[in-house]
Structure formats: C-alpha cells, structure tokens
Amino acid sequence: MSVPKADSSEQLPPTVDLSLDAQGVDASGQLADTVKTNPEEGMALRHAVLDIPPKDEPRLAYANWLMFTGQGEQAEFIRLQCRLAECNTSPDHRIGQECNCETCQMRKRVAVLLIPRTAADWGEVKALESAGLTVPAQLVTGQLPYVPGGLGLQWVRGFPARVTAPTAVFLKIAEALFRRHPITHVTLIDAEQYLWTENRSTGEKHYWLNVPGKKIWVGTKGPGGTERDSNPKEFSRWIQEGISRACVVRGRKLAGLRV
Ligand SMILES: [Zn+2]
Image 1 (cartoon, rainbow, N blue to C red):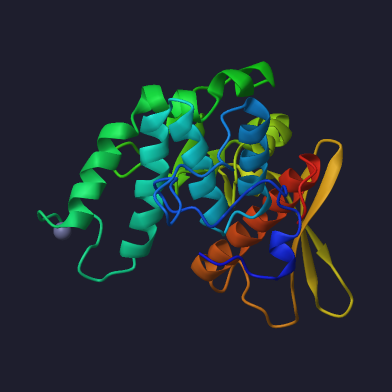
Image 2 (tube, helix red, strand yellow):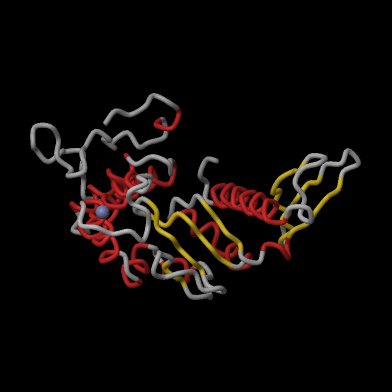
C-alpha cells in the first residue's frame, strides 16, 4: 500500500509503517520490526485512526498492533469490517440477502465477534461512564436497533462511527467519545427542541443548535430553499445532516483533532 503525499499523512507518527499487509508481515515474510507491542505504539496508532477517519491504512496498522498484543478478536473484526465496507457497495449483497459466498461468511463472522459484551469493551463504555455517561450504551446493528434514550454506537470499518443520543447526553460525553473513536456521524434524537432559526432580511435563514452554554451553527438556507413546511421530508434530511456535521466538528475540536 502506498501512502499518499497529501496532508492527510503528515501528522502520522513517524514510526507507523503503513506498508504492512493485513497479516503484519512484510514482503519477505518476516514480522515487521516496526510493529511494536508497547502501549505507546498502540496509542500512536490509535491516534492515527482518529486523525484520518476515512483511511483504512491506520485501522489495519492498529489491527496489526492488536494482533501482536494478544487482542486477536478485535484485530480480526477490524480487518473484516474494512474488507466488508468494500463489498457493501455490491448490488448482489444487500443487507438481508445471504448465501455462502466469502462476503456472507465474513458478515456472519462479524456478527459472532461484535456482540454487546465486545462492543462494551471495544467501545470503552467504562471510560465513557467515567466521563459522565448516565444512560445505557447500546450496540446498533441490523439485529439490534437503537432504543430511544440511550447512547447508540454503530461500528463501521472496525470502530464506532455513528452515534445516536439525546442532545444532553451527547454534549456531556462528546469530548471523551471523540478522543476514543473515529466518529463521523451524529444523530441527536431530540435536536428539534434545541433548534433555533435566525431570519435575515435577505431572506436567508440560519439554523443553530441553541444548547446550554453554546450556540452551534448548523446551516443556512437561502431565499427559496426547501422549507420545513413545504417539504418536511427534504427539510428533515437537510437539517439532520447539518446537525451531524456540526456535532462532528464540535466533538473533534473538543478532542483536539483537526477538522
Ligand atoms: Zn453471499
């Protein structure tokens, strides 16, 4: 795997060798000496995952580290979900369809590995509770849907990526959450009651989340933009995406990650 020269690679710790394959061996079949088993190495690799959520390479490098520190199940899970993310776009393999092909076997294995017990462990739920989480943490998958009131965590490419929560809960643990997981999507189930609209004389409408201690900008609709009343479905989709973007930016800033 080649590492792009773009700015996305600049902040990776210098000891991280992204050329390793998924098994952690180099081309000569030797265990790569850049794979270390000390905790600092693990933290650096984990930070690389947080720093560039869209990239698979840091995730696979972290999986290698997990493998060499005896955390083989989690390593296998990350590798499987990264491979499955590529298969999921195949029209032959929609969720719910099942045959005995490699993709379906990987899906079954993922379902065996990611259960509430491992999700609590890999999702570092105890640390989130220490940070103030007072509602149940839930694993959200095809079989286990979000139950309103809790903290829903959905795993994508090996890590919690999609969060669903009441606004007050999210605000309380946002920093702890983004320090641990490469979160890319946030759904606030009660955002509507915090939504604040600013009408400009130009006809523009600015939307904010007016939460305790902070006004978080969500987005702007120009004159004639799809409105809440004329097209509620379209408006709801737009505002949900805006809220998610605003929450991800807020969480990453709080956690000291670049946005
Ligand atoms: Zn299949």
